Length: 158
Picture 1 (cartoon, rainbow, N blue to C red):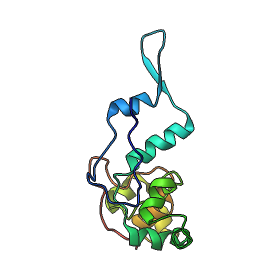
Picture 2: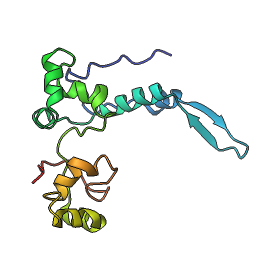
Picture 3: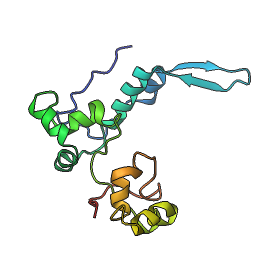
Picture 4: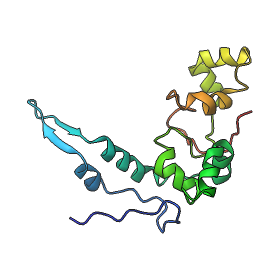
């Protein structure tokens, strides 16, 4: 079977929501059945990174925000290591735990679900739930809003 060509993340794509077919993703895993007939999948770390990169390609990247938030990326682009913020995000930024842009944080929900964050704001360690999410919450695996909501937005940390 011919493998799909690797896309240059810096170049616009004809289909902005391309996701590799499930069969291609499935073939990246070693599948085995256990004694109860349940199928288990294993994948190498490099294979996992490549799989994640293929899925992350569809994430919109806010170039201006990303370069402001991560000044080291601006320098890496100037030195020719990357073509764009998008190229950096797809190639290594997501795996490094960087956000592609500001996400809409439901302040009321976030503070209700994370009372420790509300206490940290009251103690003036963070300005808002949005500020906490960008600085720490994303890395901690906290959701910015109920997962069934649209998380795209333009809330900047306050």
